[in-house]
Image (cartoon, rainbow, N blue to C red; front, side):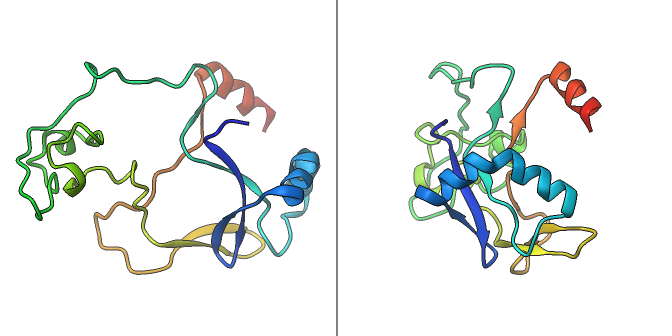
Length: 167
């Protein structure tokens, strides 16, 4: 099992890691359970799932940047003031996050939301038999705010077309 993955369930609208016997039971019966959920729509709780900590590349190895390949911004660090918070940050203007350890603003950098998992507050709620389970905001979210990074499998076109035919 990849270190970036953990088994999880949703309890009281929050994502909770499962371990031990509960995780073993899920892994043993995973395919049977997924077929049951697809056939019946599931039960009163969403099915256990694999919580990814990063995208899973199916067709290639995970890419690692070299020091020379890492982009850096040229923002000025002002201690105690937020940095990289507007489009004057060259990386932010390109929709690219600053890399921890390379940004001159250090811990005051506001352009590392994915890496710091600074997601909007949300919870999983049952939306009825036709819609199933969904992710809903649990507080007001300002227009233009970062909400959440979607993570999942990254597949090539060949794998995508093969899966599409199965559905």
